Amino acid sequence: MIEKLFRSFRSPFSATSREDFTLEEEVALYRHRAEVALEEERYNDALVFLAKILRLNPYDLQARMTVAHTYHYALQEPTKALLTYEKVVAASGYDESNSYSVAAREGIRELEGVLETAALPLHDLVDEEESSEDTKGRAHIAAG
Image 1 (cartoon, rainbow, N blue to C red):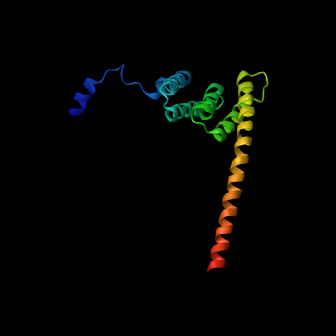
Image 2: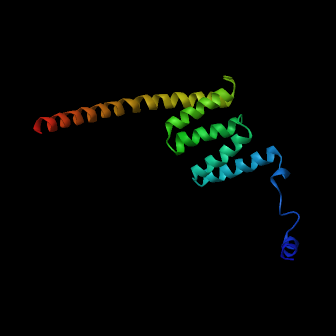
Image 3: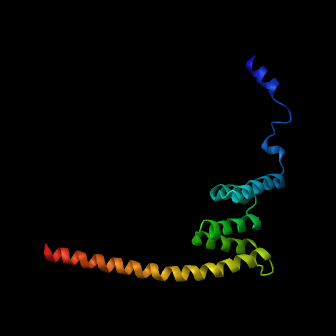
């Protein structure tokens, strides 16, 4: 009886199942949601929607490039951005005339320069910390 009552409230147009959407419509929906999330600076939410697009179509260069840009510019995660740019180049078939491939290669060049300069001071800092710990350790042993 209660089920019958609930069914009477349902509109035949309001409940659409996932099967009712075409692949293109589903991708367009996720792309729109990702764009809204990016505009609202909800970058992690945008990455979730972009991942859904890539699950449906791993060769969607626009979505993959948006992921790379999000990591690169919004989240400041150069390693993830670099890896994603490399995936864009691979997904484009290494086609140097493809605009996404060209943009990804440019992003790679930019990040390689950043990663190289960032790696040097970090390496020096680690060496300094280790040598200072070694000295303290030896001084502690000698004093003990």
